[in-house]
Length: 367
Ligand code: SF4
Ligand code: FES
Image (cartoon, rainbow, N blue to C red; front, top):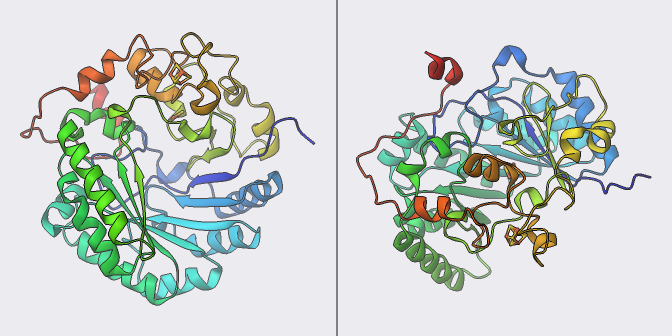
């Protein structure tokens, strides 16, 4: 029996390949290539070991998990290990026959992303003509199979004014739940932040639209709302605290405390290719680095919220202040809060075209 409580959720990034090119993608700028991906047998071992460790949920994610030709086998393996299986998908590549196979393999839930409700803008953000119509068809197939469906709508400056219409779309498509999530500024979204960040007025109007819809749709649709950090007083408890509840396995098998952990320099990530999960969870120096509260500095050390939000997000602290040991600068108690307030008050630059997600970014930056 270990002194470290077991994780509850595993984010399995099966691949970074994706048919879409969203400019707010939270995948790293340096995407892992197909040749580096774990094979089927290794993923199946990971699922078995995760279940043995205490994990309850697996999120089959990416990139686009349907890009893996062995997705049905992986789903069957995860379900067979006793994990609750949630497929996080763009819907592209999920033909009705494949969805039937996934349902038969034990898939428990589908979380389908939408980019907008206007086909033209949705397809432009996705970088793929016809994507939105395809998603609508996939949503109908999921519901027809009796699988619970959640729509996931990432909102940003370009679509936040249509939050109400996105909620209506969820009702039309038969979803049980919609998650309206502000873009989180990591990876590609951080790079494109000045084109994506909404104004304070847009954020307030979206919040009102959500409250109205919650009142009208009570009992018919669950509406989850992920508030934007940049307009908050205190940070979110990112990943419920580093190394506390969740873990992330990258396409090549690196075992991370969160999806952006590789952006923090000086951390070495052990691989599921070399070690069993319980060994990594309990002994990996990268997990130990920010577990608990001993690593904290002021103002977190003497703050009553330190066991509530764990100082916020380590990756955001590094990205915006240059040191992952600092309080997340989203926090209004942080002496570096101005880096966030300044960004939140930058005038809208509606003419800016955000960069689309693509492979080979490090090579492009070096060129
Ligand atoms: Fe959280 Fe630290 Fe801010 Fe307190 S000072 S609210 S622990 S980030
Ligand atoms: Fe890494 Fe928040 S994304 S700790």
